[in-house]
Every structure is written in C-alpha cells, then in structure tokens.
Length: 64
Image 1 (spheres, rainbow, N blue to C red):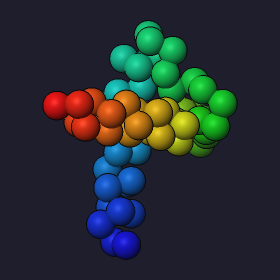
Image 2: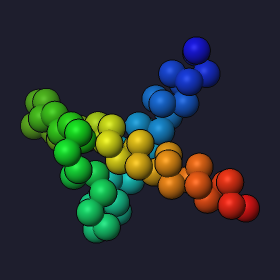
Image 3: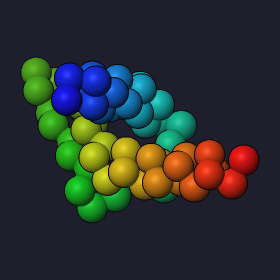
Image 4: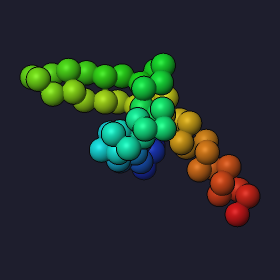
C-alpha cells in the first residue's frame, strides 16, 4: 500500500512540474484536475491527467 501512495505522490509532483508543457497538448486542464491558489501561487493537482497518462503508458508497455 505504501508503494502505491509513494508512486502516486511522485507522479503528482512530476505532472505538476510538467504542467506548462502538458497544457500545450490540452492536458492538465481536464475535468477532475484541481487548481488551488494559495498565497498568490497556483498549485495544480492533475488527477484526471494522471489517470489518462497511466492508462496510456500501461497500453504502450503491454504492446512492447
């Protein structure tokens, strides 16, 4: 259980850092992605984007 939580946390950090790049492709602003403004900074929590990218990477891994 701890491995999955750690994996989810790492994925959220990576996707949050990559959100400007992903926004060019329309990812990161999907329904279910959360944007929080705190002390003048925007924090993106891309839950739906994480799920979609996870599914895409799983399909790619299965075909390779």
